Length: 318
Ligand code: NAI
Image 1 (spheres, rainbow, N blue to C red):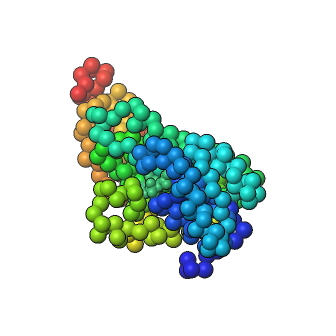
Image 2 (image 1 turned 180 degrees about the vertical axis):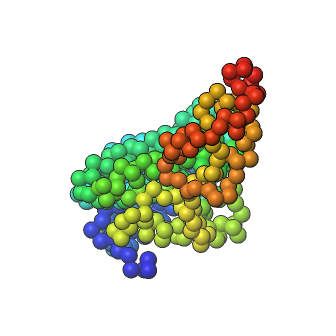
Image 3 (image 1 turned 90 degrees about the vertical axis):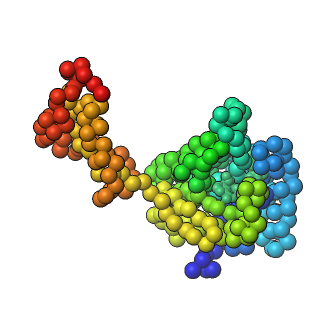
């Protein structure tokens, strides 16, 4: 059970650990024996300003409880300094939780370049920079655990969050690549789409709902994924919050097969549109379709099957 998981001798870097989910991670890992770098820029949820207070308060709380922690006040855009803090204070880093984040919600019509750029900078570039600095250490010690923070907004799209949703789905792709490149070095990377009460969500949800969305209820899944005992769960996407944990994956329809000749026209696509969209007997792929095998299978079809009466050759296209 999670009760027994310990993180003694582990160095954990939590970005954006001055509040919300990050604070909950930091307090948890410190209480289970880890040395924790509490990073937080200390600005507003829109990414304005900075302060040392957010990180300091959490470090104080950890120390008062007898735990080990140091503060770092850099923006995740300067991830190398955050990892440097870990190395200076504790000699290395084992676990990186890319959690820092901000919002710049605005309808797409009114979105400004600054709204777009700042979101990409904090979420995408910030996670990149922290991970980039930790990566050579992880490889060398043949140990690394990474959590990237995605969002339902990224998985499904969310009204008024074009900038944030794009960045958050980026966290999924980033994780999937790191899972592949890190497998050989015992580096496990997973993405979570959390839901929790924080200053980010308190403006959009009523108190009685927030009451049931404690950040503490996201922590146990993260704890399991970054533990020593996780040797294999990597590249996953998990929805977590309100006492529910679920894994998400891609689904590919069986699809339609087309012979690759001049009969592969727009009208041929239209004719098999139902098959393209038919999700009975789907695949759950972790890579692109086996197009060589598909080409071979389609090669056995006759052009008639996709309708040769309308073709590029005849210069009649839908
Ligand atoms: P929060 O606003 O309480 O925590 C984010 C922390 O990151 C803040 O303490 C902030 O000062 C810090 N931060 C912001 N920009 C930074 C930067 N450039 N460098 C270092 N620190 C910085 O919000 P919450 O809810 O705890 O969010 C944590 C993560 O979870 C974020 O990535 C957020 O996008 C994500 N998330 C949260 C959801 C929720 O329901 N709370 C839903 C989906 C995703």
